[in-house]
Image (cartoon, rainbow, N blue to C red; front, side, top):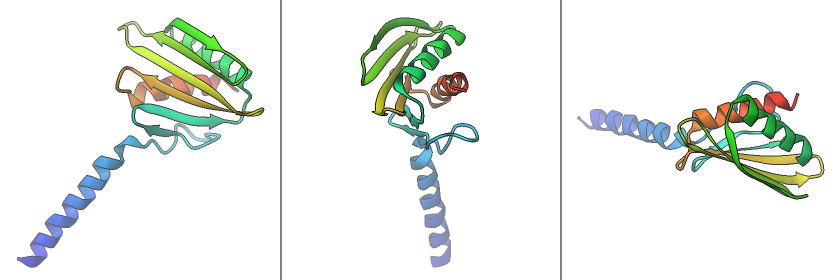
Length: 130
């Protein structure tokens, strides 16, 4: 009887671990420059490209995905581009210059985040960086 309880507890522990770790995306695509993390609704990654290059790739990605840009601000240390999809879901992309040659990208799709769609937007940005 005791062994059965231990097995059940072990299964519950593993199940809880899997469910709670579901908010982390280890990597999006092979050869990712940095670690991609999906935390609290935001997909975050640092790319080894300067802010202007990543900003251009971001604008092209939104055009490629036919997302309507509704707000676009940029300065020397960062940028925020907000767009909407055909279902009026808000897509917020924040770019922050980490160094002269690296930029942090943060993508949030919708109010609470959507991991798959955020990854789709990031993958298109990454594709445009090549």
